[in-house]
Amino acid sequence: MIVAIDGPAGAGKSTVARAVAERMGFLHVDSGAMYRAVALWALENGIDPSDAGKVIPLAESAEINLDGGRVLLNGRDITAGVRRPEVSQAASRVSAIPGVRRELVRMQQEYAAVTSVVMEGRDIGTVVYPNARVKVYLDACPEVRARRRVEELGGDYTQVLQEIRERDTRDETRADSPLRQAEDAVYLDTSDLDEAGVILAVLRIVRERISSGTGVTS
Image (cartoon, rainbow, N blue to C red; front, side, top):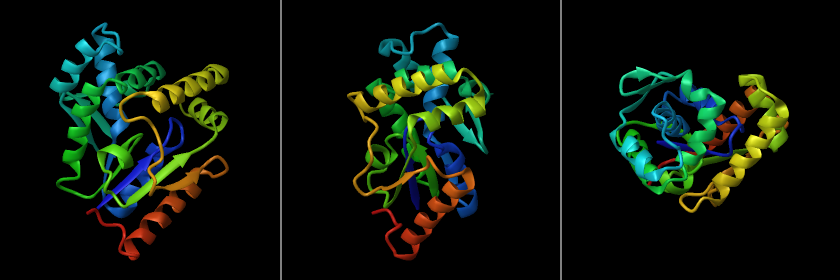
């Protein structure tokens, strides 16, 4: 069973996917954390996150494990580090490199080969698991997403809003696996919903797909 949750930065994917996975008894896979892990490793080594020649070998040699909400890189707990704003921005550039995406998509597909998953990201329903029949696209206006980021991580609202818009542009216009809603995904605007409301809405979608017999991968 695969539940694919896509959407732009700050739409609430991580919180919702984690809660839905817990309620359903599925594994939660944060694909964005995998890109942030590679981005953090690049920054730690003084590597430009846009330098494909140096970043791809990092992705190919990285051992990334998602363990109960923790992110482990080569056995090291980097959970706190990957959430820093500069790492998120670097991850957007790392994720635009086709060679990195190919490697991490391979890792992501391995998770669902052995268990049911709720996987979140920007291309889960379009590239990683195009045959997943439970697909949700979470969205919210940039202003709401920026406010959520500031509430969660702090920072200047105006700067965060600018970064959100810049990241949207990069994600939507990159040549490889651009951010877009899958044709068969359920669109959910979370701008006027609180956290509990979004979780309930997604759970309702998942359970409806399961009960109707459409929530099974082909």
